[in-house]
Length: 434
Image (cartoon, rainbow, N blue to C red; front, side):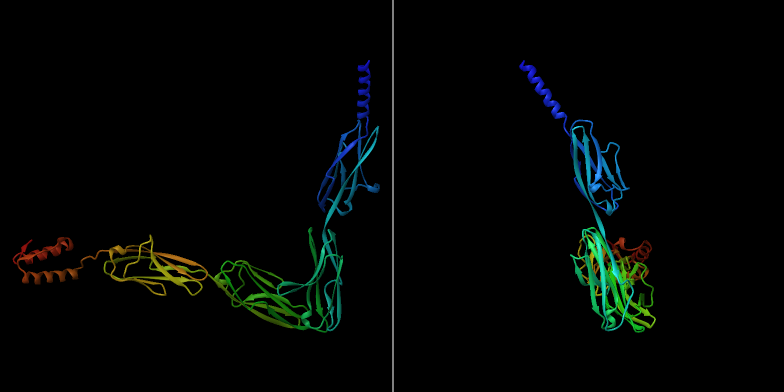
């Protein structure tokens, strides 16, 4: 009897447990995406009696939107190419015979800043008049807003805010230099946007006046060089760049009044001209560029064959930025001959060459940028007997025989066969060979 009662109680408990309204989970519970990105929310039935029907709705029963799709079983909600109107709460509703359960997901659409300025460019103002430029910006999160003026290839901050959606720039024009290009920039973690306003002076055309930020620039070969030029005048002058007596380097680009040389070489040295032109005339400003280069060394000559006792001269020549110093050494670590001399201009001189002076020699040319090296091969051979020196030796032998007719030592290894015959014929009657 107790067994039956226990079985009934257990059965009723199981029925109660199974016959319950749905329990839900949702992933992700919240998401923040950029505009035009895609996001999916998945609603899952954790427990509850079947069948369970799933549906998705927005808060206040708003329409889901034409870019929102629900999967076949109702569990997955996908928002494709999200736009600001998709931001908000999405409810997953599960219904069965025991009741209804709701779970909510939150979507945030990050918005890249947008900017608009009033009045729009260009703006003309008379000398002494006050001027207000208003910049408005939108975006999520709220962007910071900054007014800047472009000068000397750079931007000078005039006023900024991080708390308001509008920023007003107020100024009084007192000189032609007050004209120029003004920029309103809105920036957040999602990106930036900007609008430019050109401020012009009223009251007729004003001749341009060009100026450069640097009149002399020194760079190292391979570096990037930037030259900034600005000009005042009305209407706003057009700025262009040229090079004195040569075209601009092929690796260059211009951005407004800025000339950029991406990788300079020695040939890029020279005078660069900023030309500013408007209807009233033109103006020029100049920048002198010097490109420092490491030495490029060569040896003259680079191969030498000499005789023992002669003098060796090797000239090391280097092209590059001065001053240049020179250092000669032997390849392999051997020391130079005791008679070696090196001049300041790179000349290596070795007097009374020996056979042991044969080998490879290295010249290292150095300046403040770097070094360059070159090599020379030197071969020193024993002296050979020439006809003139042979004649002198015969005369010496004759004189020696007359003075010492008894013994004359002649080393055949240093005389040619023909000379040996002549000496033998002469000395047969006068000496004894030892």
